[in-house]
View 1 (cartoon, one colour):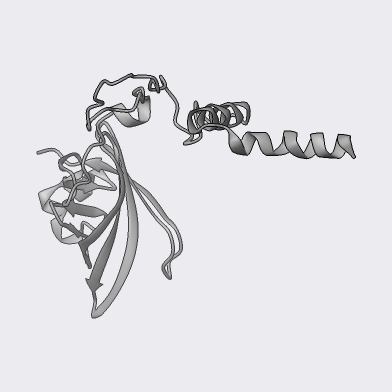
View 2: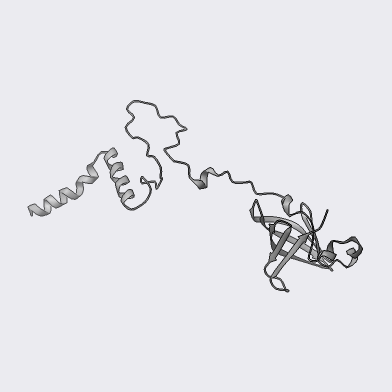
Length: 183
């Protein structure tokens, strides 16, 4: 009976610990479980709990250290087609020549909000993803030959080449590489 009573008393002791000791225990448990430096899962230098009578400023950063993910300023998502993707792009060199303009079926003209092809036009609807240097994915509303449709198109630029890929549609996946037309 004494053993059961002692065991019961030992189990209730952690519940009687002062709040500061509970926090220390919680942090130790979290740390042992691999969850940051404390029960919140934060990582970085811990904030001292023993500050005496000092006033802790409201804007304290709570000891979080900068990481690569939170220090790199995220580039704002564009609202138009980024400049590096704009211009006249041809599938062949003849697509870029003025004397073949009426038959330039491989010419794609990209401006700030529109894609123009031989028999269709696509207007920028929304931007899905982009990598500032060279990749851009967006949804376009198309019209041409009396029909309308939507497509999600990804452009990837490398020097004077522009790769256009898209999924779906009646024609299946599209994967074309254009060359920039001379200015």
